[in-house]
Image (cartoon, rainbow, N blue to C red; front, top):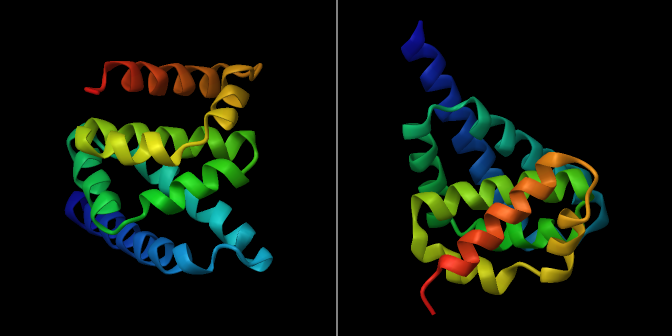
Length: 140
């Protein structure tokens, strides 16, 4: 039963990543905005349901498929909750492959990072602080 659940998670994640990589080119269309939001919420939900050792594997898939640019774009265009979810996914990517922080640092608009820092909710603020900590610790 456990193997069946793990296989389902893996297949669902692969479908989400494939869908996300397809929408990277098309996400400028207004009609895809809701779908893009749904991808972010599902990816974040999937990450939070995974064991720590599995998070690294899935984060590496995200990086290898080139979904980071999609995530950075959603970070700019999404609402506060979506920005917080994107930041969680990006933090997982950084923890899995620290070399991707350079691409993320160039792709994330700091103006929207300030929005997370000024949030009244704890989670967005915590994610922004963790991200800034990663940025400060990266090699220049």
